[in-house]
Length: 281
Ligand code: PMP
Image (cartoon, rainbow, N blue to C red):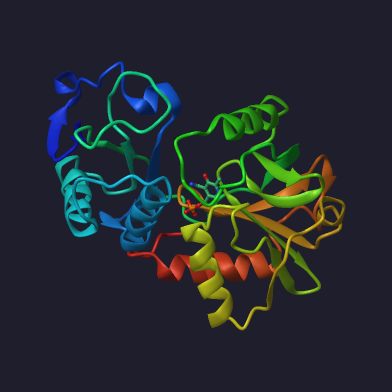
């Protein structure tokens, strides 16, 4: 398959990345994952805007603009014949001898991208279980940074114990997942962490909030206490890769009857209606 390398489309044997790339040394870069449904990118503008926002937040200027990035990503999807799957794109601050401070102006960011094909499973996800893990990340979780060590550690801890995702909390206050946003439902009201420096402002979260407005579904954007999530009627998580995923248990305690509840199901249906091509369910 074809990869994006800066402004070119190349085969993997044509790619060479410097051993001195700051992504490799420091995780000094940002990234995005964009879903493809029926050959069409979903919420591409939002993802690309967030990529440039993340870059700006780490004071990194990408060598070309959002329009051009969109065209490149579309071409990559076309070239690789992706019908269902996703595009990954990242930008590092470039290659330079290892010192922490930024390199000179002559050093330009390195952009790479790939596609991955997999079947569309939009909102057909079986319920999953979560394990709560202390959120030890830094205070700028709003930046979609390549520095994912704390996320990796949290996910692995959950995974090793047979759980699908880590439910991150800062000293008992739920933030988000290792690669997802988290939502609880109690007495017909959705609870989720407000957009702040403690979470990534998920694009799927934004689509879900839009669905809530359309459905007149009340939402309270306030942090949940970990001790309260066990008594929620419903719980679900959202991400680009998986859409809306119902949660059946947290730390071994069953949520509701363990099946997707009415609020989750209504949102899954509303979400599916927003996808470029209706997915069979
Ligand atoms: N939070 C974190 C930490 C993530 O890595 C992700 C997935 N990239 C999300 C939330 C979900 O964001 P999105 O819906 O934009 O994929």
